Length: 561
Image (cartoon, rainbow, N blue to C red; front, side):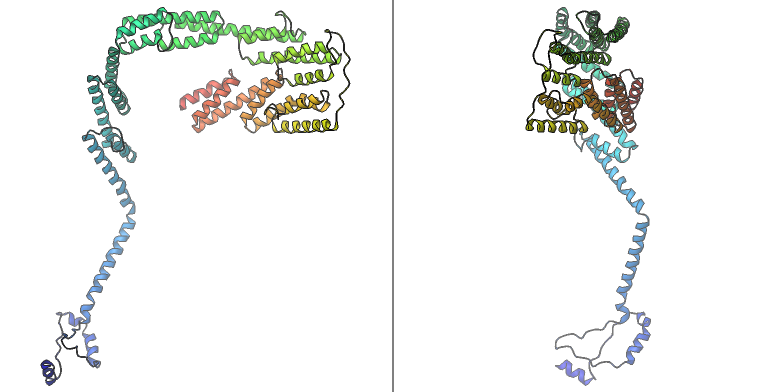
């Protein structure tokens, strides 16, 4: 109260303005304009409150200057960062690389060499993924390899052969071989051999050799081989292996004497692998090659004589002077020979023709005998099936060969039988168009036509459809090859060989399919799909083993593999 009365006596409260040096002059004009305006009536602060001090305008503007400066710095810094973003991003992998190398060095120092993502090897490998030429990473991997080699040597001294082998293989994977790797490998083999007792192995090998047991893990070749792996200069084992070579050579000669050329080639391959320096190898190779040439010449002679016998009408018989005997001899000389198989198919077709002639003459007994002979050579022949249906439908009884029998009258079909017959023929035609010639069983065109002939063995539609299946199969084959559906073409070729095994068109079809598989193999080699290329090449080799392109594609495969 006293303060307030004193203030009223001196003309009201006196206000003191704070002064900020020369900053007052910056806004002198503002102050003059402010003093020219009448001040609003001032309200006294409540009792006990200090009067509010008014800060000059110049002082209030200082924070705004700071804000402006900060904005300029932020904008400028952001622009620099944007313009140098490539440099900044390049620093990130470099930082990651340095971190990986540091961790790898630490893992190596701690002895954590292999196994797990935090091992020295894996960390150095990860660093190389970021920088393949990084010298520190390359040197680190070499250090790990030498450390693994040292561990292998230590394990070898401790007779821990499994650990020694594991560390040695890890070292080999990092160092890629070398004199040190070879030395440890040989030392390990000798140690293992010594541990297994050389004398015991040699005694076992000698016993196996005496009993003629060469092959298998307990055979003489494997046991002597174990000794030589640890001690290549062991005289007893080397002599034993030479004895093994002599026995294998004798086996080859015996196989050639039995005309088992495939077995002789297999034994020759085994001998060359076990004893590449065996003195008789060149002679044995020459003997096998000579046997192959002689067999090929004999096979070709059989084939030519078989065709001559066919043309002369000497189809079959008890001796060797007929086509059937000659083609079978060709197959014995060269199992699987396509020309010999086709020749036997031609024999079967000739027998079916003779059987149909016998049926026409009413000689059912002769027809049955001929068809049985044909069935032994070509059991799935379409002509054979049609002839058997004729025989079943037209035979009235047996009789001696050459005795005519009157054919029976056509069967009387019920309306239900006629409807079923028509449905079977329609289904057979549909199956043939779809390519279901011989499969699936029961629903193939072949089986459906035969079912129809089971109702009426002389039905012209079923007979014609069955006999036309080989031509349908040839058409399906050609379309499949054009569409590059080689699996379908393969099925059609096999089907034709059953339906008409003597068809002369099969040779050209086989060659065309083999060429298509070679084209596919060559294409896959160009794409780098070597597994698919090998599979396609195997198909080509099976179909056209003498095609010169096989060696060309095979060479490309080896160059790229």
